[in-house]
Length: 453
Image 1 (tube, rainbow, N blue to C red):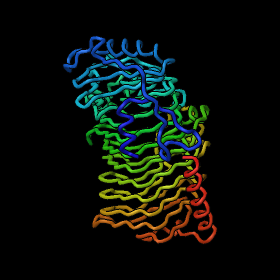
Image 2: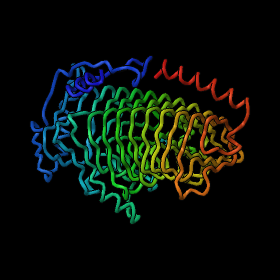
Image 3: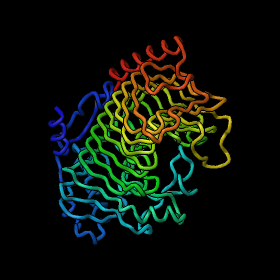
């Protein structure tokens, strides 16, 4: 079934998904694209020097006319296709052949500037606007970005240098950003050297990210692999991600802007992933989570060579919540802090945030976790006015290294643990009420993910 799915995607089919079942639990319903053109037909030159922005823009403008005729495919053959930002259209497949590389221009003056996202209120790095991402989609339906292991390369070094020297005029662009869209597939590609994020679905529904490899070097500042942001019904599976900061990070808006926008990230399923992140976390939640994050299932994940394995981040003023999250069958190796949650992480967009907007962290379950060469097994540092509650740990064995002097750190947190080594803090060994809440919740969330995801 898996091989058949990859083959069908490689044939560049349209995608729709049964909304009652979700994405990781079922295969997309695929319809062939009846029309196809090559980027060569629009004058593109794949020499790595010629700027092909107009060719991409003209090709997609032409293919837009087929949206009501079953959609179309834009085929990118082998070659190095230098370009600035371009926008996709609905009912489109962008297909990169093996040996094809879409390469982002390194001249910031070539990149358009767009408005900040409303759930953030400003650029993340610089107040005001932000550079438009390399490949964009806005209010689309049925869009597929796929290939035969083609490459999308952001040539991010110029952006990393600007960030490091505090010379950015606007916040850095991403490789792929799809906004306010539904039925999105990204598959069978390699993403390299993102200026900031590699794949950023924001305000989207029914997103399927499958069989992608993502890489940025360890020294790349605050680069992140996959960022589901105020999006729902998201599946991320069979991916390999190595980044400078976070591998996968779930987000939903920043302080008062995220609270006002009010769109959570929910119904997310992550499975069969290999994640590596140098200075951040392989799997992060927040700290921009003001719209809420809930109903997340993570399973069969390998987390390695990172500062932290799993990390929940928030701070006073965020509001929002992170709740109803289950992680199981997790292997962690060569990580400083295996499991962490902090209520003291993150900055604020401006001085208009409400310091009394307290975030909620509740019903977080981790089970069947193993770890080797770990320095700190767990660190849970909650907020005094809003403690972290119902942290449920079961069947966890973490082998600490010789550097380790303290295995657990806990404050303003409560929960239950069973068969956990090293022995956790007393705060996480609460008796029967927490135990009953943990395991009844685990049963309900597992059933719900089976039915919904």
